[in-house]
Length: 312
Image (cartoon, rainbow, N blue to C red; front, side, top):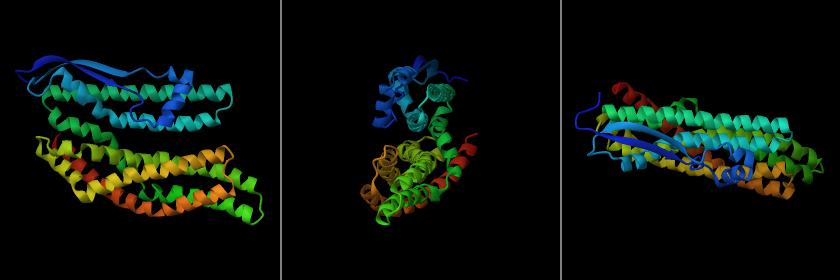
């Protein structure tokens, strides 16, 4: 039921598909014409609503709505990162067509998620439930991922694989073994580390980003249950580990991804392998940040579920 005194207006959502993507992924998409044409110039959604004019107008809606879809765009960015890696292995026309189908599916699913979520958010705003539910809707998908997170796989697992492969290449030369064989093995094994980074590391990072970005907004929500949840996020013992984890995932990505590419291109000799091994070794301490942050996420997940239950 729409509240009395509300004003008719149009809510317009406009998103750029590249907003959460790394520069290298954007450049890759733009360099591949048949891939680029699969993407819409913008992702748009429009809906007629009746809202409190003291709180909302069309300009405020247009400015506020995009912030609510960072998780969906971040997920698309991760899927395009995987697609870019897949493209490196796609040599035949058949494999390339399979890649195009994968990308087309990712775009279509992302658009569907955005449209459905936007409709639900606007309906909630219109019925008066939006003050409490709009903020929570942003995190529903992110928080659902928390239970799947294995903290040990965020840093320790990919670093163990990376150090082992780099050490094997370095030792192959010093011990007079076949370095080409060591490089070939490393090229295959490092894919597991990249997969762990993409699936576990990036998922943990997405949740951390959502919580850190929305804690303040949730803490001033008129609904007491939501505000209490927001204040839990803003606690230094929670917020600081989330921010540290976010930065540390980027640190690992900045070394692991070039290492994997170097292996693929055959440019990691014994000397470079030794340098990479040293860099990875220095990152072993990052695992502690994942242990602390994921534990905080799981505590928040319990609080998040309680808020959702209280607002039903």
